[in-house]
Length: 388
Ligand SMILES: Cc1cc2nc3c(=O)[nH]c(=O)nc-3n(C[C@H](O)[C@H](O)[C@H](O)COP(=O)(O)OP(=O)(O)OC[C@H]3O[C@@H](n4cnc5c(N)ncnc54)[C@H](O)[C@@H]3O)c2cc1C
Image (spheres, rainbow, N blue to C red):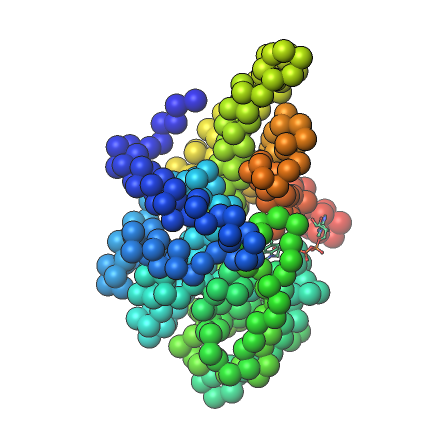
């Protein structure tokens, strides 16, 4: 279906990002998967090409492009022609804005040029061994010592955890208040900060997902993001965009799987005819085409709302819920249409299938998305049961 949200500038940009992905990511995909992480150099090359932190102001060496459609294009081309484990957008738009919008001037002067160039790769550390969906349950803590803060605790499942040079870390600052959380930037080389294992995973093999440990890490005042007791609300604010990013990734991934499968079933024959000539294949592909077009239109509309500053948390949750569920259904059908080849590692669809499984879990699970949507329509369990 023709998409109406892009103009000529976007299309030219898409061409250049596609060429970038085909030259700098696609040829390395398999090696990255074997090595358990992407090369750091691909971030430097993306930086040279102007693909990182495009929103950053010119004062810091950025381009000041707030239009989310440009990031949407980076996301779509990464999923189609790069690799799902290459987390450029996590760096640029999921973590970068915390520093850009909440960071002290000294921190921004020091870090933003390096974020834009790709010299410093970013990650965000919220999840802990004992707290994932329930962010208010985190145990890592930060205590003030003069102007500095002393950070203790551990985090797990942290994306870009091995390659990352700076992490936004959530830690409890008010012991008896569930939402009393602060956000701190911890940088490579700070005493007491250590990385754990690069965790072995079912999919996203080229993405480095790691544990992080903090033992009496002294975080200077300039590395505190915003009010050290209001980090929870800042996290909530940025999570709507995180969910839109996920939705854009998931639908693009599903679109790519659909195209790969269409080629395959036109080529591969059984019982003397292409697989695509069976009614079942035609109907499965037709259902997927229809579902993808409908959802893409909804997500594109969310992107425009986001550009206008009007994307609500519940709409972002609807986009993420639908996209991750559809992505997983599409991957399953596409593997099925590939037959045994779909189960073989030499076929890209087999990786796409395992890469997709996490979409319904991270960046807020499908169940949490349903809670957010449920609350927005007046079905908030907490209020209903307390009579409020
Ligand atoms: C590959 C990968 C990368 C990740 N990257 C990052 C990262 O960069 N930074 C980061 O901070 N975290 C990251 N995470 C962590 C991720 O965000 C969490 O795994 C996710 O939020 C779920 O938390 P959990 O694993 O603790 O599951 P749990 O919270 O233990 O949930 C277990 C199950 O219970 C369900 N559940 C929980 N609460 C409710 C409820 N109220 N109602 C109904 N069902 C519920 C969940 O939906 C899930 O199905 C990553 C995870 C993975 C797998």
